[in-house]
Amino acid sequence: MFQVMGFNYKTAGFDSVFEFMESLKVSEANQLEAFFNFVKNTRGCFEALQQKDWARFARIYNGPDYKVNRYDEKMETYYKQSPLAKGIMTEDDYTSIYANELEKAFLAFQ
Image 1: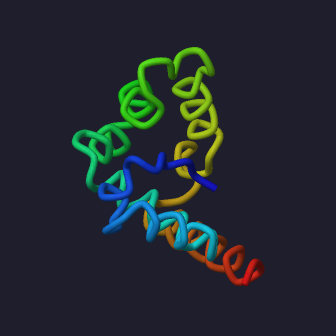
Image 2: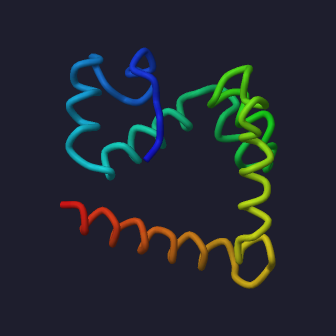
């Protein structure tokens, strides 16, 4: 689901790279948790998402070559297409629906 490089195992919430790798092999839920931990524990990452500063987030998450694959542009495009950005639903409603969809997807893989 998400790529977190092995050298970031501590930032992703693990005590060793082996523990990190073993956890990610178990489920998408573990991959998502590692990603959340990475975002939470990486200086400026969560704030960039909150501010919808796609270029800053992409630079932090993908590195200085993020522009090669236009990660910032893709995130902005997908966000603007979302019901949240269009004002169709509130952030709480969107988060609740997204969480339920993620839970269903994780259960399907178990």
